[in-house]
Structures are given as C-alpha cells and as structure tokens.
Image 1 (spheres, one colour):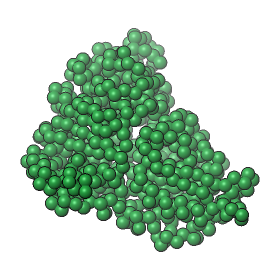
Image 2 (image 1 turned 90 degrees about the vertical axis):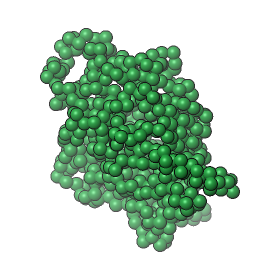
Image 3 (image 1 turned 60 degrees about the vertical axis):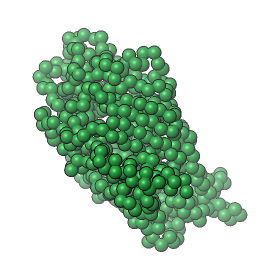
Image 4 (image 1 turned 60 degrees about the horizontal axis):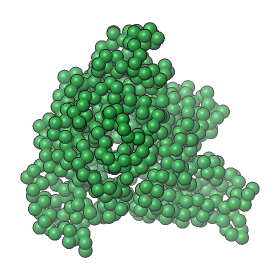
Length: 618
C-alpha cells in the first residue's frame, strides 16, 4: 500500500496512467454508465423540498437489542440508525440507477478508463468537534476499515490498492490495474472516520461511547439495548449542500426496540412510535385496527417503486454434507407450497421470487441471448445443461394445499441422489451411511413460524426430520456470522447496478470469511469468474448480459428455495408528516419528509383523548 507521504512527482513517474491527471476535468457527480441527471448548478434533488421546515421528531421501531455504537466491525450488534452520524465522499441519488454527487468531496476527478479517482474535500467539511475533515482522515479510514473493519469491507474494497495525499484537500485512490468501472463510485461510498477520535481507542472493540462524526445528527441519549435518540446538529456544515437541501428535517430521531414485530405493531397503534414499514402481509391485511385507525389518525399507503427486490428464500448451507448435492437442494424446493401460502397466509399480496435480481431488467427471465452465450460458453462443461436450455422457474402448485405430485417428484429426485426411506423408521436416510436427513431451520422473526410450519410438515411427508428454532437477534447474528446453521431465511438486496458486493454474496473467498453474506457457502470458479465480468462491465449492455449470466448460474445451482417479493412499500404512520410531491423512483427517502407542527399537535391531543396507553395494557 502506498502511503500518503509519497511525493506527488514520484507517483506520476511510477504510475504512467496518472501522467494525464492534469487533463482530467473536475466534476460534481459521476455515473456508473451514461450521464448524470443533475447539472453542476443543481440546488436540490427533485424528491426533496428545499423549503421543508426543520423541527419536530420522528420515532421508529427496531427489533431485538443492541450493544454497540460501532457499526464498522464484526463484533457486537450496532444500534439502529447509527449511520446518520457518518458521511461519505459522495451521496447517491435515489432517482438514478447508480449516480453519485459530491458530499464530503467538493469535486471528483476520474480518467476515461477509470484507472484511478481523486476527490477534493470540501473546505467547510467539519467533524462535530469543529476539527476539519482532512485527507489524512480519508486515507486512515481506508486503511483501517480494510484491515480492522467488518470482513465486508475487505471484499468491497479489494481492488483499491491504497490512497495518497496530493495537496491540502486532494486525495487520489489507486486501483489494482484491472478494469472495474464501479471502483470510483465504491470509493465514494466509503465511510470517512476521524483519525484523531480513534487515536486512544481500540477500533476492533465494541463501544457504547458515542463516536464522533461529521453527519447531520449526533447521539443525544442511549438506553443500552432499549432505545437510542439522535439530535440534529444545529451548525451542521453540509446543511446547504445540494444533496442535503430539504433533507434531514427532524430535530430528533429515536429508535425504540421491541421484542418482535407483533409487539412492535401494538406499540405503534398505541402511539409509542410514529412510522412503520410493514413487511408482514397478514398484519397489513388484518392487524391495523384500533382507536387510532378508527379516528383517522394513522395513514396507510402502498408506495410503488422500481427498486430491485433481490432474493429472499430458505438458504441451504452447502457447508453441510447433506446439502452439497444440488439434486437434493432442488428436490426440497418441491416441498414448499408458495401458492397455498400466498392465498392462505398472505392474502395474495406477493409475487413469487424468480431471480436474484427480481423486479429488474437484470433478471434472467428468458433463454440466454447471444451476448450471454458468449459469456457462458467457455464454462459449458462445468455447468448443468439447464443453464443453456431452460429458464429457471421455481416449482408451482395449484394452491389447494395438496402437493402430492410435487412430493412424488421430490422423492424421485432424492432417490437419484442416493436417499431412500427406511421401512422400519419411515425416515429418509442416506443409502450409504444410513444417516437420516435431519436439519434445523433457524429463524429470528416469529412471523416466519407460520410459514415454516407447513413447509416442515411437507418435508415430514418425505421422511425428513426438519425442525425450526427462533432465537434472539444477537444469537441469530452470531450464528450467521459463524455459518452455524443448516438452513436460514435470508434476503439479498440488489441494486440496479450490481458490482463488488457480489463478491461478498457468492465468492469462494467470502464462503470462508466469517461475517460475509455468502451464507450458502457457494464456492464455484464459474461464479467467481462471472462476478468479475459483472464488476468489469464497461457498458450497460455488457452489465445486463453478465448479470443475467450470473443470475441463471446461481438459480440453476439451487442454493435457495425462493420466497416472494412485493413491488410496493407498505407504510403506516401517524398523520403528522408531510413529504415532497415527487417520490424517488428507487425507494423511500424518509429524510426528505418533515413534521407539520399543526398536524403533530392535533395528533398528540387526540392520542391523549383516546387514552392509548390504557388500550395497549388491556
């Protein structure tokens, strides 16, 4: 790694690609592919109101507990919302596929081949203690999170070789030389931390001491494990930046912790917090009843968005011997009855997940195109023929709850894979070892118990001994980090411009890295090669082809039993908020909402009249 003490002239001589650095024009924003939407003189995002008033408070819920205010390491459970303290060099816009504009960085320089990137820090950028944000802080942040931070950062910034100082406010990041168009944007997302605040502290240890940041909020109150409150920094240095104007309007933001989502819903209806994103179809359909609803004080909306929904499903831990055969994994998918679940449990509110990039153009929904075939053909002997000849489609049922044909298909596949039913015990056993197929489905959300129960009963009809266990969030996270599970429910969120994060999801290196998102334990040289094709795609067309190729290889690997997704975000909130007329295309930006004082006063008065605390205790 090249240190910041290197002389600028020496670096230009060493790295010939930088010799033309003087010819690169500074810009205000960069896009993954194509042009940026907002011009250099833009004043605010379209989905933010520059005249939004400041003031008031918002309270959210969180599930489980927390024991740390340090979100950048593997240890501990960080408090919800802690990210509002910290800033990055750039800010992503929510109405473009993947575009970033300057935040801590006043300007960005990047050559056409994207072989390096330089950021010039904003002269007004300040930490909450008044000290300036420096190039030294930026370099220290990169070195520290790559060596001492969460394993995710090592994968995400693997191709960033180092950074060096060039001038008082300019920092140049070096890349490993391979084509990776995403790297400049990835570097822009890096959290910048104050070197002087960590000088006397152990970066690898959890802490409840409020960290120093440069963002719009700081920690105001902490009740360990139960709640945390952030207060808006009155002299926040970046309040009038175009990326911030009209955003971060609440005086305080609080997160109240609850045991599970059912308890949290009752607390919401009792007025103990203000805003709720509802992820449980049953609760959305039947759970929103009570005085606050009847009085018209709670608003409910389904807000459409074009965000990728990624993949949710039951994940096989292929580190377990019984799940190493893809035929076994494919067979067990026939025991999950989505159609019955959707009708009986979800009130027909969901669509079936069909891709790791569901709800986007990145999904492999047709047979491979010529461009995809050119990518896949070199790996033909290493891939199942179905990758080339079939569009992946998860098993279906008629929704009646009787899936005899599916189970017959599953049993035939299991027999081909070397499993049979022991007549004396009626259990499915390995024909070579005699060991029964027995596994546990690990859960953290009790809402999944009613979905997993019928799945387990279907598995029992195949002679499989499956159980489920719901644990608290701390134990759940620890078991995930150490890959100590047989099967788990997981979600991989995906952006419209996938890149380096795919390494953390599916690569061989991540499979062996505790704390990675490669929960399935995928280690396939073909997958590794396709990840690199995605990362190094030089055009949108090439990215689409590479991502679809990766998608179909993962799908035909049968690493998950796909669940479902919704193209809308279901939100409920006490009617004291206003929001801009324009919603962002790709998800909510609750930081652009604000409190209407008159509505807030009316809601508070009506809540007292309704005696909601009495309702919740009853």
